[in-house]
Amino acid sequence: MAGATFTVSDTGTRGALFDTLIVPPHQAAILGVGAAVRRPAVVQDGDEEYIGVRELVHLSLSYDHRLVDGADAARYLTTVKKIVEAAAFEDIR
Image 1 (cartoon, rainbow, N blue to C red):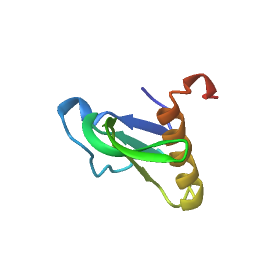
Image 2: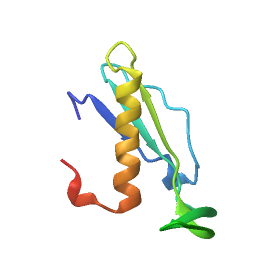
Image 3: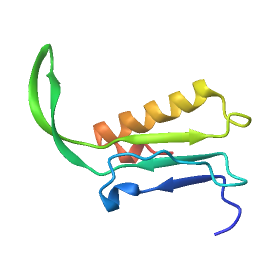
Image 4: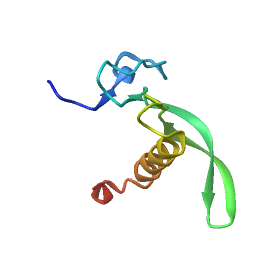
């Protein structure tokens, strides 16, 4: 592949929970996807909160700060998180 500006690295397929990723040369950013693991988590149902077992995945984003502002990177990662949590994949544009 040539001409890419963004990479996704699925280190979770090898069992890693998360990784410290280095942005490849000539790219702007890399998103790391860790292994999906079952963990206890706080679940909100309306105004109620309880502990439930959920599949959790760590996402890590490394980016070239000369090209990407930190606030933009945080908004991007927050948007990805919301889409994954809501399983709203039809919202991806």
